[in-house]
Length: 218
Image (tube, rainbow, N blue to C red):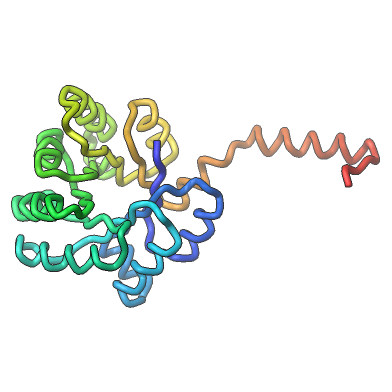
């Protein structure tokens, strides 16, 4: 499973990219606005750090506006994935941009039916928001299972399931068990995946015993 980082913070992206764990980045208008930088320049900087797909979202609501913004974003770098909302206008724009060879990430997906439409529209990625469904006492990970089952029935569909709105490490583990293509995770969650108290305890015990031996490797 690929790991995308869900942030627009360039410092976090550079630090995590250095681990070799980052396959791409997802941003949205909220994350970008927090950085207080020129949006287009920020996206260009991110694309220069991460060679994998970098999702940059349009803000227009009509198809023509989405197409204009999407084409402008796509000119920033070849690894841009234009992020479009799962609306009628968004799917029309998705079809047009996909036909032009531009990667599209259809976002704000909350049902299996919507995910099927995104695939039919040629989306490279569809982003179901599991955490936001969980917030409403709905089964976010259950939706991932439904989408994967539907896509699995039709090998011609090439849309990748990008698990979004990830809140904790178990979302990532569950997504991997189900066979999701991508999980986009906030930096905090990726760091949590590294951590386990028994790892820390075991390492301390090993180092304490080594110190008692009085030896060195170098």
